[in-house]
Amino acid sequence: MTKINGSFFFNEHMYTKKLLSEFTIKCILVLGWCMLTIPARAQEGNKSRLEQNPETGELQAISALNPNTREDEKYPSKKWEALFNKPFSEKDLNNFDFFENAKKLDSASFYQLFEDIKASINPKDFNLLVKFSRIKAMLIHRKYHPNHFPSLTYTLDDLLNYAYLSQDDFLLARAYISFGRLMFEHQKYDLAASYILNGVKLLEIISFESIVQWDYTNLGEVLFHSKDYEQSITYSKKGLSIKTESIPLDHRILNTIGQNFQRLGLLDSAKFYFKKSIESTKSTNQKDWENINFHFLGELSFLTNDLAASKEYLTKSRLNLLEKVPEIAANSLLWSGKIALRESKLDSGIMLLNSSHQLLKAIPRKTIQMENYRKDIYLVMSEIYQQMGNADSTFFYYSKYSALNDSINSLAVLSDLEITESLIKNEQNTYKLAFLEIAEQKGRQQRNMLIFLLIFFCIGGLIYFVWQKARFRYKNHIAALEKQVLEKEVDSMKNQLNTFTKQLLEKGTLLEKLENQLLEKNNSEEQHKSLIALRSSRILTNEDWNQFRLLFEKVYPGFINRLKREKPDITLAELRIAVLIRMQLSAKEMAMILGISTGSAQRTRLRLKQRLELESEINLEEFLLNIN
Image (cartoon, rainbow, N blue to C red; front, side, top):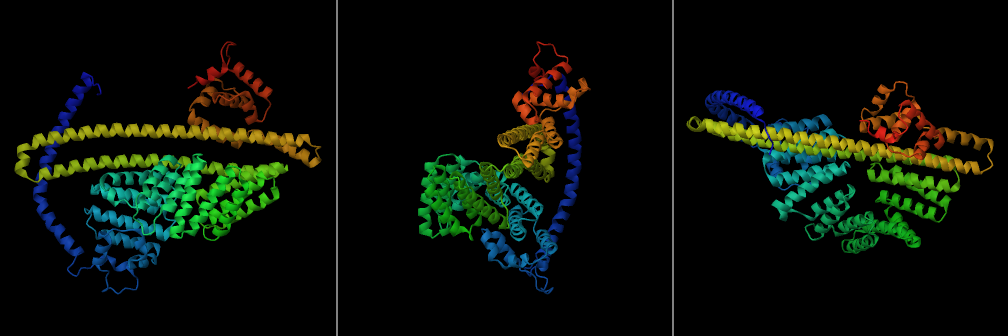
């Protein structure tokens, strides 16, 4: 319960009385206007519907469907009614002639066609608009994937808005699932998992019998890609208890469960489910899935040091999936390269990894999963060349690994922000619906003049009170959501800063190892030049410093500016040491990042303390940590 002092309550009470008086006058004026105009508008609306639905049973706006159609050959509206009013799935895209004709149109005609169709739909028929938006989104995806993503998201936003307005929980659940599945196709895994999970949970409450096996199968796979492994196992197992598909999906579900257990480190459980999946493929003749499971058994054998079995599984998977599922074949080559590295067959490992890289490069559609394969290729390559003593190639491939790893991590951060923004948008839609319901209730009450005159003040006061309460609640809720977004952004920046710092430390460690390797050998002139280049590359570059400083200032705003303001003559070296001390790094870590000796780092700390004019008993670290 929020406390309100007397002064605030008095001012709020006076303000409320003023608003209530204005509200009453406006309602009387609006009521009179409605009494005069509603009959005329009803007649105009009836005339408009007659023009849009003539007795011929045809929609005039559909003539753009086929450019070669004569003006008197329109598309029958009965077909549209059949399309909208029946349960609709993506399979219908291949069986309905409208879709085939629509896919042949150029972009301008394609979007104009849907604008014309939408114009023929009653704007208050939200159920029909939901189905229309879903079909439009599926067609945009089928026709333009992976392009036209902004148009797709705009259509999906319409889909959700109409589903909210329909106040039909079943339509809303299916809209959530449709939204999530199309986001999954565009590799927005966390966003997809959020929407599909909400949709399936809602169906479990209101219409469990309408859930099919594919709903749980798809949800389990999406949760796996979003790294929610335990929840993926839970919903995948639910799919095993439902048999609604003409070809059961048990083999696919069992494989998903096995991959989840593998990621959780439960290798015996993973092996059990992969073998169960292989048994399931035999009854449905799913040879490709049998070979996919062979690949994962090869991974498990490698992880348990059974290299002979791993080679057999991976070879069988690679040979059988090279044309049908090339990304899995490429992954099999990658793991074969890891086996070669473990067996010290370095030349063979390089050949296998190059073959894997070339196979991935030849696949037209790139996925995040394939980028992870490529990242692992670069890392294993750097380890092989490190064993071979080839410092240049080691550094080259490790740099490529680091760059790709940074790119993948950045996508993960953006995905977290997209989820937060989407949740805020859903909350805003919910409150908009509450206001719409109040407005509709108000409109119904105003149609009857006699009732309005008898209970106007009671109803008006009640409506105002509810509206005011909802407005304050809405503001407080939005403020709380904005605070959550800000906290998530700060956490995200902290994670990026820690990741960047860790990369700088890893870079310094790797370069130090390479430098020691060169120092242990009798250096030729060329090796001596390489040694000089390595030593210079250990120094924090201006580009590294600028990127590091940008992330630091987002996490600790005002820290650097306050130091400069209090000590304008502070040097860049002292400023960098101060920043690294604020991050609570050791002297050795600071020296490694800056490319200097530990002694030099200690001396710079001493100069910094003198610059800040701190007494000997004052601890420099505590002083910097207390700077806001």
